[in-house]
Every structure is written in C-alpha cells, then in structure tokens.
Amino acid sequence: MAKTTEAVVIGGGVMGASILYNLALRGVQGPVLLERDTLGSGSTGRSSGFIRMHYSTAVNTELALKSYPYFINFNEIVGGEVSFVKTGYLVIAPPESIGGLEHNVSIQKSVGVDTDIISVREARELVPGFVLKEDEGFAWEPGSGHADPSGTAIAYSSRARELGAYVALESPALDVETSGGRVVAVKTEKERYETPIAVVATGPWSPRFLPKLGLDLPLEATRHEVFLLKRPPDPVPAHPGVADLSNLTYFRQEGSDLTLLGNGNVEDVVDPDNYNPRPGMDHLQDLWVRLTKRVPAMESAEFFTGFAGLYTSTPDLHPIVDKVDGVEGLYVCTGFSGHGFKLAPAVGIVMSELILDGEAKTVDITPLRISRFAEGDLNPITYKFRVIA
Ligand SMILES: Cc1cc2nc3c(=O)[nH]c(=O)nc-3n(C[C@H](O)[C@H](O)[C@H](O)COP(=O)(O)OP(=O)(O)OC[C@H]3O[C@@H](n4cnc5c(N)ncnc54)[C@H](O)[C@@H]3O)c2cc1C
Image (cartoon, rainbow, N blue to C red; front, top):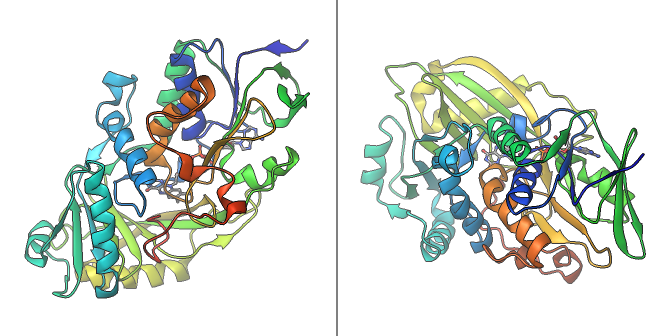
C-alpha cells in the first residue's frame, strides 16, 4: 500500500538533510528523506569542510553569510554538533588577479561580511613561514574556518526526525510520478510515497536522475582529490585556511598537526557509480610542489592520506536552486560545484521558503534559476580558480 506524506526529499547529503529539517521546522507533516545509500555518502562525506565568504557573486556570498551563524551556534539554533573550528581564511592573489580580489571583497563588504584587503606586512604576521610576494594581493576573513560536513548532515536529519520526519536509507528514488502537470508520488523499489512535493537533491547523481524526469540540465559529476599531510611541527605552526590563487592550491589545518590540501583548477568528468576514490600519487607530487612554493618547510611534511570525491558542476559553477516550471511541486537543488557545504544552512531555508511561501525571501536566489542556461545569463566567475565561484 502506498504511503502518504506532505513532501519527499530525494538525496541524503547535507542539502537534502538541511531541506528536510527546514520543512519539518516549518510544520510540514512527516516529510520523507530518501537516500540511496547512507547519509553523507556522496559529496558531503568527502568534503573539505571549508567555511568562508569569498565568492564572485552576491548570491553565493549571501548564502554563505546567512549560513555562518548556524555553523558557529549549531547546537543552540538547530541542535547537534558540527565541530566548527575558527581559523580565519586568507586569499592570496597574483598581480593579474588583484583587481578581481578587490572586486570580490567589495561584494563581500556590501552584504556585511567581516573581511578586508590587507597588506603584505599584515599577511606575513598572520602566516609566518609563508613566502608572500610584495606584488601579490591578500584578503582576510577573521571569522572563517571549517566544520564537519557529514556531522552537519547527520545533525540536520536527526533533528528533522525529532520533528517528525522519516529518513529511509538504502532507498534510491526511481522516479517522480506526475499527473495533470503535478507531482503525485515518488517511487522506490519497495515503496510508493504519495506526495504533492518532490525535491531533487541528488548531488553528483543529478546528471543521471534529472533526465528521467525530463530535465536536461548542464550538470557534470567531476572528480576532485584531497590530501592530508603531516606538518613538521616547528617550522610550520597551525595556519589559517588559505586559497592560493597564484599556485592554484587551497589548504587548511586539520586536527592539531595535519594540513588538508586540494587543487584549485580543473577536474575530470566521471561516472559517480564507477570512479576511482583513491588519490593519485602523480597529482600529489604536483600539488605538494605547488604547496612548497608557498610554504617551503612543507617539503619535509609526511604524506598521511588522501582520497577523491565528487563535485556536481554547472557551467558557471553556481548551483541550481529552483522550482521546475510546468511541473507543480517539483524542485531542484543541486550543482554546488565543489563549494556547497558552507551554504547548506541557508539553502535549506530558501528551499523551504520557495516550497511553502512560493518564493525565497532570506536570499534572492534568482541568479540560481534553471532558465539562466537557456537564457545565456550565466553568473560571472572572477578567477580561473574553480573553487571560488
Ligand atoms: C573533495 C571535496 C571537497 C569539498 N570541499 C568543500 C569545502 O571545503 N567547502 C564547501 O563548502 N564545499 C566543499 N565541497 C562541496 C560540498 O561537499 C558539496 O557541495 C555538498 O556536499 C553537496 O551536498 P549535496 O547534498 O548537494 O550532495 P551529496 O552530498 O552528494 O548528496 C546527494 C545524495 O543523494 C543521494 N542520491 C543520489 N541519487 C539518489 C536517488 N535516486 N535516490 C535517493 N538518493 C539519491 C546520494 O547517495 C547522496 O548521498 C567539497 C566536495 C568534495 C567532493
């Protein structure tokens, strides 16, 4: 017999969990989360967890800014532990990107982010032991840091369950049924959930799932490697999160003695069900050399571990957060292009507003609409460094 619910969210990453929580909080009765595997088993569980505000557009900056209080006070606002660590965040730009750096910082300041352009002298005080050049540019965010992405997804879904939501693991959604231009049900192998609302938050599986619903969106699952290096303790003390646009690396501290290191440029398009989750040693070598250009003492660091995860990328590296025209009750929330974790609290809120109030109020998400691709109205990206969109 079919089950009946007021809403079904498809995908148990940090986005689906945040949406589920916000729907339950707003009084939606018994919303259901369908997850094909386990919570956080997609991009979320392999995320680097950076939380920063430096972006190329106001919409991403505002989503990050509105999310920030949740990370620093998650237990008080939602309930649960997300392990936020405040380290500050430094963006380092080569001479040709200083105009872009100033442009981005002016966007951040206009929406109220605590950030500034700082001098090379001030930057040297923040990161002793780094090689910083006189002709480079520096932007500093004192309040930024990192948190635990899977922990955040689990905390949101646990709290949603306390509010009456139901989480079904190992339950891939097979189809969204429509009738008369409206959503009527979501089907899994074992169940049929009758519902007027279906939210697709399927991360890197979106390029496969959305075409089944007749939606052909420019989404790609791309593979991204991350490495952890054990720092030589004396020469390299704990450091802030860094985006190094000159050497196309990003890195942050992890725990007391590790540095997490990632790449800031292109990734390969892959099949999300059949990609190599292990790190490539050639890539490690290349990335490590680039890191030592900035932090020479990291040459004597030790390789600790590494892994690869999946981004869900769009042509303008901005997500798709919208309702689907022509199908009442169908919503899409995907395409976070490798930087969505830090946006998840606000994304859950704006999705609940879109669904329950007919429009997002907390942040104007018009730039994230589906139709921008057909209209050729893509969002601008300031840098070649793909992580900052
Ligand atoms: C290596 C790496 C580093 C990153 N670093 C950062 C960072 O530092 N900061 C940051 O902000 N972001 C970062 N990101 C990006 C961030 O992790 C993602 O944007 C975010 O986790 C996306 O969440 P999601 O819920 O959209 O997707 P996912 O976490 O992939 O969740 C989608 C879920 O849907 C499920 N699913 C798929 N199809 C179905 C179906 N048919 N039925 C049911 N369930 C289904 C999947 O199993 C999956 O659990 C990084 C990502 C990676 C991979």
